[in-house]
Length: 251
Length: 110
Image 1 (cartoon, one colour):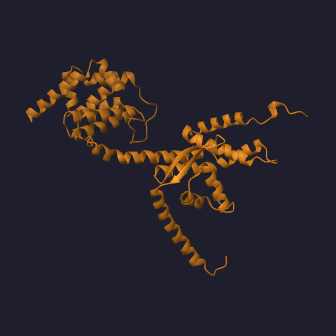
Image 2 (spheres, one colour; image 1 turned 90 degrees about the vertical axis):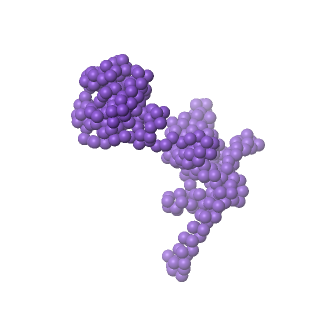
Image 3 (cartoon, one colour; image 1 turned 180 degrees about the vertical axis):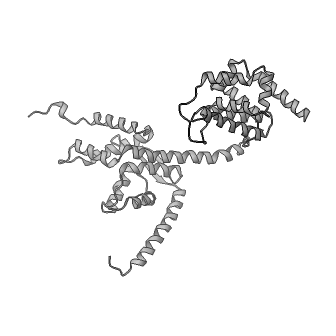
């Protein structure tokens, strides 16, 4: 019986398959190169008169272990690297003289509006707190600066709610949880709120900064609705400063 | 066969001890441990490499690529000063545990 070429074990073809398998398990190319060199050496050294290349390939695969389990271990090593970098970051920035941003705290009003935002999400039966819920929370707060600012900009809080309800519908079933997560856009907006507060040399993030954060974030439902109603960043910022001055003078 | 947990716990001291004797690479380290343990300590080959990378991150060992005569590239690892210190600390711990066990088992027949 003659052996056709198709019946022969093709190492390079199998290696290509093997690499594909390792990559799909998430193994990065730097680690893969090292593993491949190990793998090839293991195969080469096993081959004898009794052991074929194909058999040694199979044994080498077994010895190397489950690629996903191996990748999990690599991932642990990589996360150690990240946490080490994090540990060095602060002292390094201090050393080169880059000032560290102080962690900012929210004013009581800001905290209350965020809580109201959470309630809005629940009443929409949503399982997340989005920019639209945070915006509604800001408008619900009777004592806040935001309501006054919006009114001076000629926008009725009721209209904002109507516009939001046009864009997002309620969820099908009430969510049992009270601990809803913020969407990435809200997190981004809160970060911007922090830098707005810092820019104004404030030590606390107020509801008005969150409002600016929502507006400047730009891509969320809140920003879309506010833009539709003709609210823009520059005039809002000016109006906020005016409103704060007014409050200070009357106090 | 040695239990999985014990294998895992002994990997770092084994690797550090071997590298303290001189530069080596993954495949060779595995063969050496197999030989020294009379084939009783068997690593899952792939699992050694993440350990090596982690120890490199810790600053215990360093790596360099070396190309052999046959064109095969190998990543050689060698021990650093911090690795020597880590090895010393591990050695004290292992010696203590083993001497306690030996003391308890002296004269006993298992």
